[in-house]
Length: 190
Image (cartoon, rainbow, N blue to C red; front, side, top):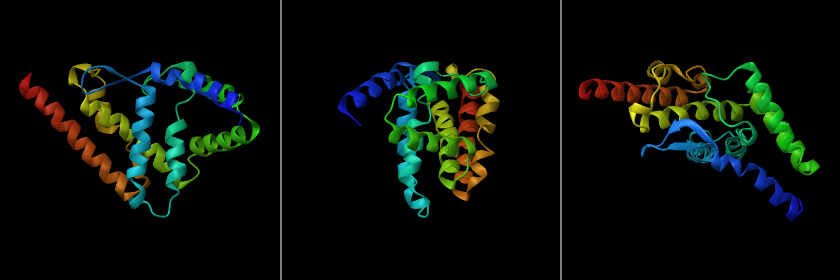
């Protein structure tokens, strides 16, 4: 990849630092898409010893690129995302990847297909962690930032994707426990 192609691609995905997500930080500001992807990659890195047979570098790559289409579309919360939104995001991903040299475009296109199809253990781990990062973020955020539907969503979101392994099932249960505790504390204090 030439330096110019490198710079131009980075300029395009810079919007991930600017585009906010529905999630809020513990200090009460909206989180950027880039912040979500960064922490998701850290989560994958920290799981390496739990999944010695997986290619954790591949999982980290999945985590880093999974939302690049949102540099064009912006973030739409999972509970509001329609089939049309998903198609728009796929088109945005293809648009961004088409600006890369052939080798990188081919590699990343294949990685996105693997992720979308959940056709590997690496893709299943990425997806489970992606769902759990959202729950962790909500549990860290002030409960005043939660929408009414999120009181239920935080208890159920991502459960199916966490069936992938015993470790992610236990993680999901722990996060559900944290959500319940946060909700109960709010009732007590409120």
